[in-house]
Length: 307
Image 1 (cartoon, rainbow, N blue to C red):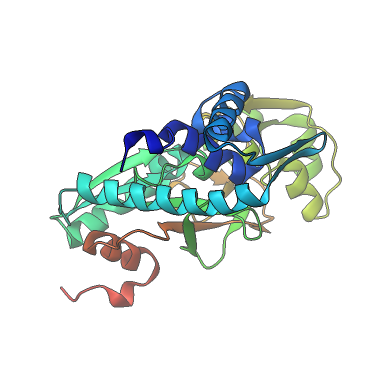
Image 2: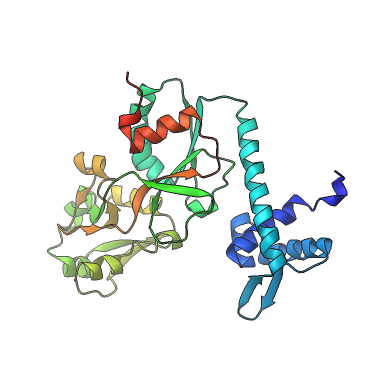
């Protein structure tokens, strides 16, 4: 095969992301490139092929029939290449496991659970990769992922999802030191008027909002008098633990902090969570023994080998 017969890999990656999103800007965000860089690489690919892959219209992009066919081929080949690369990088080792997760889940929950798994499987070496948004995951860089997943939303490409918790509740929490300083709110209205509400400005968590929580529970809503905002949920959780305000959190994810009274529930109301803590598995990956053991430990302990 002549090298000149192959298009540049960077062009194929740009085209695959643009075709998946039907949007050059979103493709650029995924690949850490500008919209114009994606556009140039797609145009270079179209010039190389001698035919258009997209119809560019005022209301957005659509794939041409040629683009649809080429997208399926490119996506399949890139996945196969990523999987084979991962397999070769592992050099046949079956005792290494890279787990992708958000910084919050990794620090507050996963790190506390891992000693149990490592006691069961001491020969498995674990690496934790923190990425806030699962849609930005590179399938070649991790084996399994742990994230909150909202059913019905766009699935992260190339991943299947299994719930770890059968059900979960969203509650309002803060540190005991915050209550010592500010007093316990009498009710939801008092919380809005007289307390600092911690707000995450992150599109991935836009389904976990104070307004949505108040309205779903039937409380009157108006913007709170005082807020502390951050674009990282991990920063807000650290702020809550430091006594800076009240945040929303998942009861099971925070169970140990609640049991140890690092955090306390501020109001008695609980709202069933739209999302569930889930295990993400690459759909076209060879399932190693380490991956199987970790998956069974989290979601199906009955299949673990007897000690």
